[in-house]
Length: 123
Image 1: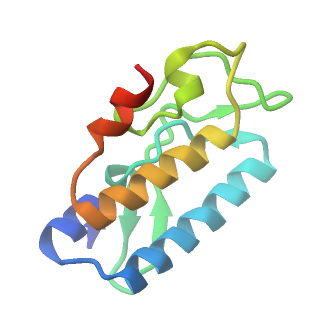
Image 2: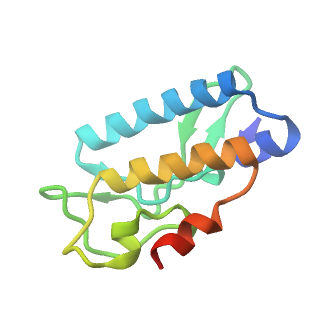
């Protein structure tokens, strides 16, 4: 079927679909995080869905193994970045940044747009 972007552009995703996709993405992030991997670019364009509704996290080009939950580089898609990543006020950011990006991804699924207003809150 393609990415979640393709899916929400073609269909109006209901809450049950968004919930099911979110649960699967969380399971994927749990798998990565248990192995000290941070994806750093969670967004609808990087989530693939097959015909049966199974979700796969894609585009690991920015993924990085973490040490002590500390990643210091500024990587990812700006509108899905956690505040601590954008602000660079902390010495690094960790696995929680993927969860923030997932929250932005859920909003994107529901509203069919990225949320530039979130960006304005912390830039």
